[in-house]
Length: 71
Image (cartoon, rainbow, N blue to C red; front, side, top):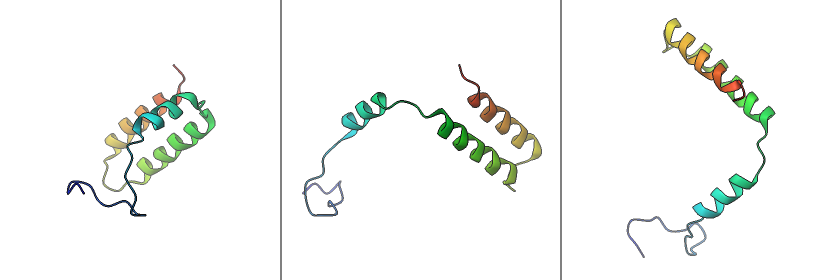
């Protein structure tokens, strides 16, 4: 067994499924409502982050809001 890879959980072979995942991701339609909810959640996290200054929060929130605007 290759010492660079951890053993598979079930003891079987590890298969690289990145190409399959990329194909499935391209074929799956976007869920704009879910994307909006995700970004809104990130905005809430930024607002409550005690490690950010008010200026950093303002910039981060502006960037996130831009992502909510459709291209």
